[in-house]
Amino acid sequence: MDATQNKSSLNPFSTFLIIGTAWAFDALDVGLLSFVMPLIRKEWLLTQSQTGLVSSVSSIGMIAGGFLFGHLADKIGRQKTLIASLLLFSLGNVVLAFTQGFVPFLIVRFIVGAGLGGELPVAATYIAELYSGKKRSMMLILADSFWAVGWLVAAFLSYALSGLLGWRGLLIVTACSGFFVVAIRKHVSDSDDVKQNTKEKFDFNALKQAFTWRTPLLWTAWFMVMFSYYGMFMWLPSILVSKGNSFVSSFGYTTLMVVAQLPGYFGAAWLTKHVRLRYIFSIYMLGTAFGAVMFGNAVSVSATIIAGCVLSFFNLGAYGAIIALTPSLYRVKTRGTMTGLAEGMGRFGAVVGPLLVGFLMDKGFSINSIFILFMVSLIVGAIAVLALPDENLSKDGQNHAE
Image (cartoon, rainbow, N blue to C red):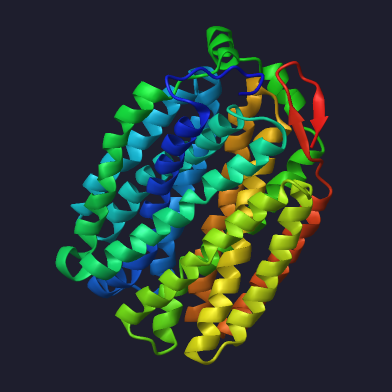
């Protein structure tokens, strides 16, 4: 346990597993949305651009959720905020499953996205306060590996149950995450520092001081990693179908690509013992850029799968690295707010990415040219983060280089 003295009825690793499982539920929701997009498009006869709008509206909600719940985590505590965000997106999915029409679907999906966007930065903030130093970096990346687990469950459910339940039934499945609130309420508790902060009036001067030269660089890195991730992965099943694969086989191919995410995470976690986080992020971003070029030029099924696995391995490792880096740059008093802001700003990229892919596909742009655009964005993100420090800020405000 680190200096934040986070008290729980369980040991830190058990608490880590609880938070990680909540993380997996978020990925389950996003993954299911990706897999059911072709079904929704077919039922409502949507254009490619309208289909991309489904993902982008969710991301807009996640921006709002990241800003709101990240700040609430500093004002009312991590535990209460986690519970509120988890309930919002799980109950919202129940409502979403019964919506009729494209516009009502978009409205409810915005609300669901707000819950999702609130849970992720708060969960990362909480994990950051369970550990310190290099172990903090490693555990944050491992926590993000639960994202791949959630995607794998989403792929399995879509493959096995989409014909039986339809997209509405699959969305109801994600509402089961609401029951997980009980575990969080019983076994997740705020650190002594956080409890003390919630008793005091929020210090806006501390927040102002947190906005340093590193902030725009961090936000640029977040934007680029989310622009590439959501732009590519939300469209993978649809792109596979457009390349002549059947709807069912595209699920299987995407699942193989998602499996490749796990060694990507584990490799990044292992590297934290030997390499600074900003270098890990940059290496993985450049690896993703290489994968984007491969995917854009892939013609055969085998080449497409291999390129997709390269994309998954590197892109999600980069995602884990930036999640590990962000809360370590800020003090406890403003950590939730600044982590929420960073993820929220990054999600502007998650809005633009899917919309841009849909727009370019409607205009007749080739998959190759679209993925070259992603390659450029990934290189820009790698350059931006190289200027950031690797720091852990302790509760006394001192900088501790990793």
